[in-house]
Length: 184
Image: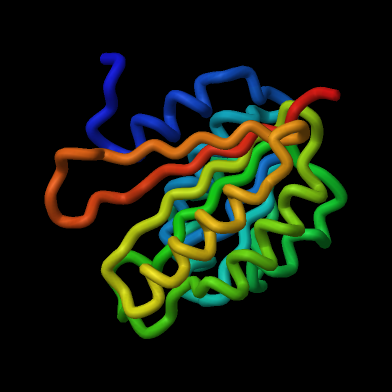
C-alpha cells in the first residue's frame, strides 16, 4: 500500500529503515507502544530513552515491555529535558495526552517547542524526528500552530521537513511531520 490510512503506517514506514544499533528517543512515552517499536527498530545493539511526566506511563510501558529488553531507560521527566541525552538518531513525539486517561495533562506548545529545539540540536546527521500531532484537547490547536511555525522556520539547507495529513478523513485525524537532518 502506497497511500497510508493510519498514522502508525507512516511511522512504521520510517522505522523500516535501518536504525539497527542506533540511539532512539520516545519523547512522549504514553502507554509505551512507541517505546516498544523503537526497541524493535534499534535492536539489541541500540538504546532507547523514553520520557514522560506521569508515573502511570512508566508503569504501563514497563508492563508492555515485560522484561523482553534491557537496552532502554524510562525517565520520569518532561521532554524539555531531552538534551540530557548527548545525541540520537531517531526521535518520536506523540503530542496530546495519555490515551485512556484524563485530558487535563497534555503536551503544550511552549514545552513542545523547547523540546524540539533541543531535539534538533542533539540529532545526528541523517537522523529523523517524527511528530504525530492530534487535535481534540484544549491545547492542541495552539500546539499544532506552534509546531508548524517552528518547522517552517527550520533552515532548508540543514533539514528536510515533510507534512503528511489524511486529507479526506473525518474526526480530526492526526498530522504527521517528519524532520531529517541533512548529511552536510
